[in-house]
Length: 276
Image (tube, rainbow, N blue to C red; front, side):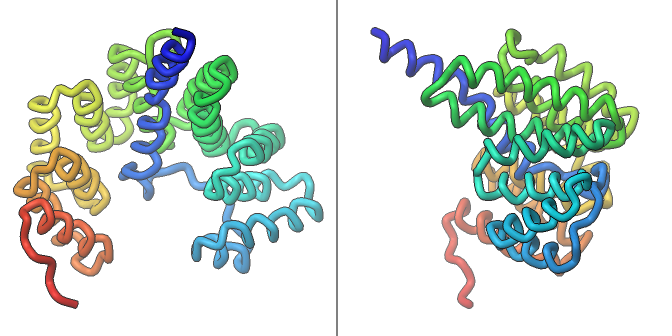
């Protein structure tokens, strides 16, 4: 009986993993995001190449030389996050926030790290996981409050609210209010957030209607179309997925991601992939 109860709570806690996976991997507003200070050029090359351990080591050296530089702690946290070392990522994001408490993007990534650690803890320490989940909510709220133009933070907060239970700050009504706030800053992102909310609540006809409205509005950012394509991929709908992908190609036909999406369309259609 005890084991069954733990398993039930663990499964119920899966919302955080779902929420964070959605915001990190499909967010379409990169160009609109609150931008942190840049990395040193040599470390940026390591980070962009996915060499996160080497980037973390180099950043640790930089931090020791410049212990009051909030941006170095932030990027060290980002590198550690990519390495799934969430505990140390949290401590470095905390240091960045302590040094520069009004930087929205620092709070947003601290929230992400807390959420990922909460999901990790849900397998062994539910009390700690719940505390971290509440902190995730607070950090996302702080990020959105500090900079209403940080679209990534607003999308993170909306996704959290859409997925989380009410006792952790979630709920459809809360998500809708935040979507209204987002619509004043970035209408297309608000439409995407609403469509994603419908999908999260398994209201697929309404989600499909919203995504079609977005396609018909012909936005000028390729990432918007790819987020729509992700929805149709997950729904195993190759016809509408291809519609989104080809619309994306009109924005930038050289984007390397198009090959992946076109390949997925062929797989869903049970057609052979082109020879390479």
